[in-house]
Length: 400
Ligand SMILES: *Cc1c(COP(=O)(O)O)cnc(C)c1O
Image (tube, rainbow, N blue to C red; front, side):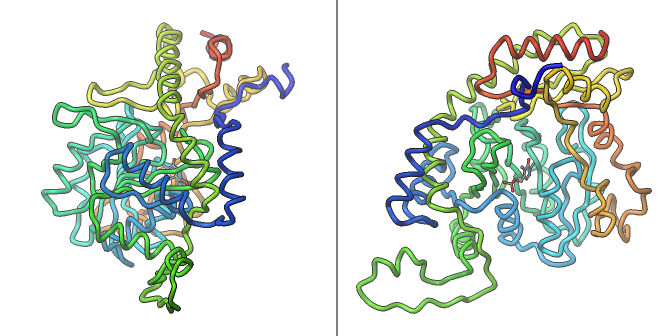
């Protein structure tokens, strides 16, 4: 058994002196909450994904909340999404008092199955919230075709998808342009770049962007940045119910440095992911992630489906004992105790879903993916030797 120092972590943020200096710069400027560094980070982020607008917020969960509010999601409305995602996806819908309508995933991509959408659209459907799970773009073309036909807005949960690309009318474009109506990103340390916590909302709609900026700061009519520089006394007002979803200036400064590292991070992650594919190609019964020809993942997570004979929990424990940290496949919100209380549907016309706890027969692929896949270590600083150790131990643990 190796000691903890040698355990290969599942992920590791790449933070160095540049980020420490940036935080220092923001702190010593005296302007520590949402201010000029945040504004600069927003411009640089919008340039990167080529969106018209980018609005920084406190995290991706609050980004999703504001996005749903912007497209008019209200109490009692239905929002079509996946259960197979981090729980924040479903929670953001519940924050609006709306009801998540869970559809199953495609087993190969771990993303929403476009073939299952139309059958759950009802006259209460207000939006579709798609996820680019683990950084792999979902089939946006198919999703948009359906959504446009039914006049529904599409929000992209791009929490994990910074730097991921999709082939769009012959050109490779960054996720977040956005191709749907609004895209939401996360800067949690488990994602590709980090500001500690943090989020970004991109859109090309000026009204929505304006609303994000209002609501993230209590709906304050005149921002503190404007009052600070004013020569005349100004009183602000609060026209609607707002929130405190601000990003701090310290985070904004760190985010700008992280954005500079992004191209190098992506190159390295894609190299390591390709290498996993090669090193694991001949393992019997192990299913590797597949990338459609129209998508380029950032490989936020490298998720493999274990051979049938390999028990997930035992396998993960054996790997941990051998100094390799893994995570189980993506969770399913509908199987959590919280969603025994929260309302959700898995079809049309249900008054809630009457499935047994922990199993819904309309969400079989989601549950299978959660129960039989594991996520392998992958991070920018990971060495080839570390990767070979992961492969060797995975092979041994599954006795293959
Ligand atoms: C991480 C994650 C979120 C939540 O992001 P936070 O910034 O932690 O709020 C939402 N959706 C998905 C798919 C995620 O992976």
